[in-house]
Length: 103
Image (cartoon, rainbow, N blue to C red; front, side):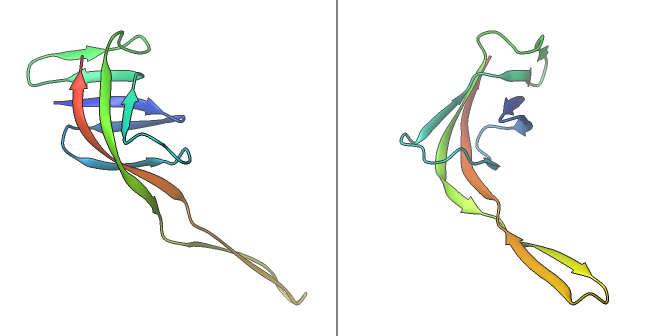
C-alpha cells in the first residue's frame, strides 16, 4: 500500500513503516503529523485518485526530528577582476515515519 501526498508545494510517495525527509516547517510541538492532502491511494487491488484530493483520506506520521543536509557551496567568480565570493547553504528537513494510511 502506498499514497501520494502534497505538502509545502511538494509531492511525496509514502508507504507505512518507512522514514522520509520533508521540507522543514520550523519547530513542531507535537510528535505526530497528519496530512489531509492525499492525491492518490493504492493498495494491492484498487487505486483511488483524487480530484484534486481524496475526501476523508489521511496519512498519519510521527516526527523523528530535525536534520540538516550536506552543505552546498555557491561560488561567484569574475576572471581577471580579483573578485571571488563563497557562500554556503544547508537545507533543513523534518524526518518523519509514516504510521498509517487511511482512505
